[in-house]
Length: 216
Image 1 (cartoon, rainbow, N blue to C red):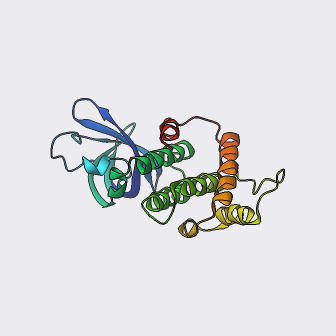
Image 2 (image 1 turned 180 degrees about the horizontal axis):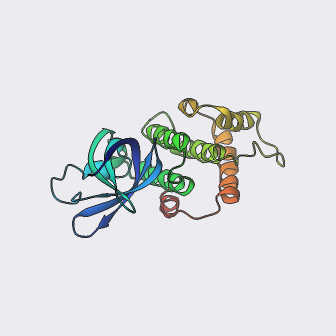
Image 3 (image 1 turned 30 degrees about the vertical axis):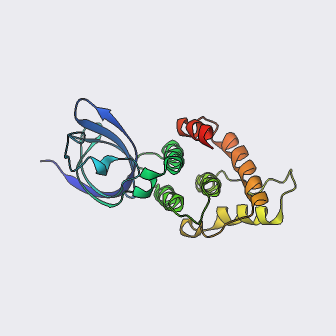
């Protein structure tokens, strides 16, 4: 008899499998990152079609097979519809998904990365926050969550506000990250530091970032 479980999570990416199925990477609160199949999700009218799109957040009913899980049902709480009509915002979101996918593992405690990804998508949907600032905050906090953030660089002179922002990002709960805006000069310094740290601590190229750089 198949044993079903419910998990709370968000779809990081999806790809077609066979004629009608989908394979998804799902970041969950309970079991870290999971690989799962959604049978018939590409059929017209499938109730799993929208639920297996990237950024879909909610509860997923799964059963475990030998090598992966199968999604049988989903109760989606947020599809992040705002990003579907915002191509640049969606590119930022896909970049965040790639970084999250890079950092997370199966059967690992990934609650903080799950919260960071979710709150960062919400921030992208806000008209009050510029996307480049959201990106800087996401990058620095992702590095901090994974225990690699060294704090403000000591080998250069930064504005006091930049130093404060970097310390605030590293130490604040994810829920309080996206509560500020900065002037252009501070944003420029944050971008420089975030880019340097991503190169040093992540050190890989992301396809969505390459696309984003052609647009901005």
